[in-house]
Length: 114
Length: 113
Image (cartoon, rainbow over the protein chains, first blue to last red):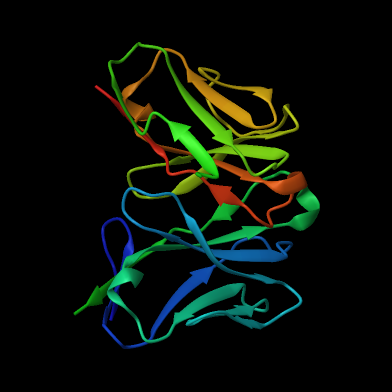
């Protein structure tokens, strides 16, 4: 299940199960969204992105869903593996903003139980 | 060949010291960034440079001074280090001021004692 810890929300799932990580974004003008995976001691690594003219995009074992009405983004990971254990961040950007960087969400710690 | 490389990976220093973190990217990107990740894992942008020109300077103490000698390098110099500066600092780059192809370095863990 999902719980809010002292620092990061944590989601614990059994290996092989599907997981869903949720994110609420803040800027209604944002038109580009990215999910990142951060393993311990490493930098954020790109997983999948979606533009605001789409509701869903699929990659290998991952799917991102975008609901602009409620400003909600989710990342679905199918058939989770031990290597999926990491902190996952959503990030948003307004493409018309030039080099104004990404705004990151709080992050969710995904733990894959063997 | 590392796309965005930062040095050092770890930096432990005393309060009041001045230190620098270096970043280099070999992706041919025009834009580089510095982010700070605090103890709660929250990532926040500090600066961005596009073709050696400062674009973003978020509310960061002026003890932090980025320097971009060329578009492949963006260094971060910090004066008079304080305990609250302890964090992980990430460099990132992207092509032509967009966020497509955004790539992060592996981070520099700064500990001020």
